[in-house]
Length: 84
Image (tube, rainbow, N blue to C red):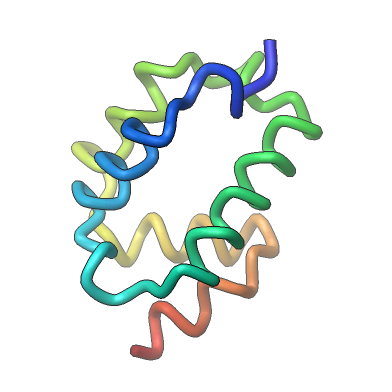
């Protein structure tokens, strides 16, 4: 099952809201996030992380940790989010 098939737009928006990014990211960033989710799907990380685990990450990780994690994964598009 593809991660994008499991995550609905509402889930993505709720996740962004929890991360408090809705007020600082632009539509282009949302498209990049969707691209990242598709990349995660390609890497088959959904086999490692169950959907509830993905949605619970914000409870465990602070926003800087999430951004650092994305950086570690090579998602440089989020560097601009951190700089804002």
